[in-house]
Amino acid sequence: MDKQTHTLVNPQSGELAFKLYRFESIRHFDHIQRPNYYSLVWIQSGEGEAQVETEKYVYRANQLFSFSPYQPFMFQPQQPSSGVVIHFHPDFFCIHKHHTEVACDGVLFNNIYESPFIQLCERDAQSLKWIVEEMEHDIQQNSLATNEAILSYLKLFLIHCSRIKKKEDVSNRELEEDQPEKFIVQRLREYIETHYRTLHTPSDYAALLNITPNALTKLVRATHHKTPSALISERIIIEAKRELYLTDKSVEEIALELGYDDPFYFSRFFKKQTEVSPSVYRKTVGQNKMAALLKKS
Image 1 (cartoon, helix red, strand yellow):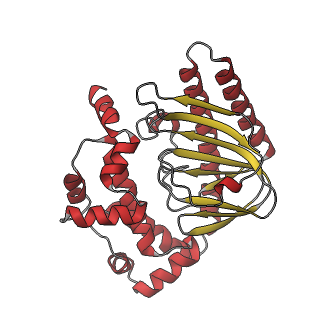
Image 2 (tube, rainbow, N blue to C red):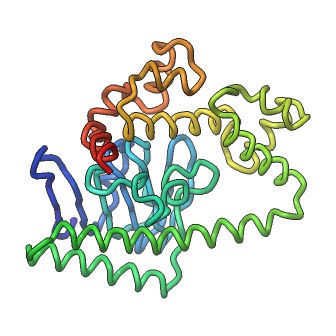
C-alpha cells in the first residue's frame, strides 16, 4: 500500500504540476506507463525487471530511473519492491529552458545512448533521502512560497542525480577506450548528432563509417541492445519534442527542419514512436505558455 501522496496542482489548468509519493508495492507499474510528465522512480528495496521503450533491464535496490513525457516504461517485480516516485510536469520545471542551471537534459533525460538509470551509493542515497524528506515536509506545512521551495529542492535533486550519471558515463567510456568496436559506436553517436536532420537510415551512417549495414547493426545491438534505426529515430523524436514544446512552429515547419518533406508522413512517424500525435503532445505538455515565456525572456 502506498503512503501519503504529496501533490501540487497548476492553479491555471488544474492539472498535475508536481507529485511525490512513497510506494510499498511497485505492482501499479506492472503495465506500460506513458504519462505526459517527467518521472523519477527510485527503487529503494527489491529487485525485478524494468522495461523502458523496448529494452529490458534488471533493477535492484538503490537504482533511480528517469523517464521523459510519453516515454513508455514498466516494472515487473521479482521481489517485493519499495521506493519513491517523483512526477513533474514540464510547465512546473522545464529541463530545456533551465539546462544551464541543472544540465539534466541529455544526461538524466533524453539520453538515448546510455542506460536510463543511475546506481546510488549509500552517501548519494542519504543525500537524496534528505531532499525528499524536505519536500514532503514543505508540502505538508503548506507554508509561504511552497511551489518555489519545491522547485528549488527539485533542482537540487536533479543536479545531484545528473552529477552521478555523468560520473558513471565517464567511467563507462574509459573502460571502452581500448575496445575498437566501441570506438566505431562512439563515432556513430557523433555522426547521428551531426546529421540526424538529414540522414535517416542506417545505411547512411554505415557509409560514413565505412562498414556494412549488417556490421553496424551487430555492433549497435551488442553495445546498446537496440537497432541503429531505433537510435536514429529516438534522436529525431527528441528534437521534434523540443521543437513542439519550446516553439510555436507548425508541425509542417518542424517536419521540414528534420528532413521530412511530407508533414503527414512525419506525423505518422511521430505517433508510431510516441503513440500520440504531434498536436496532442504539444497540447498536453503546455507548449503555448512555454513559447510565450521564452519570447518574453
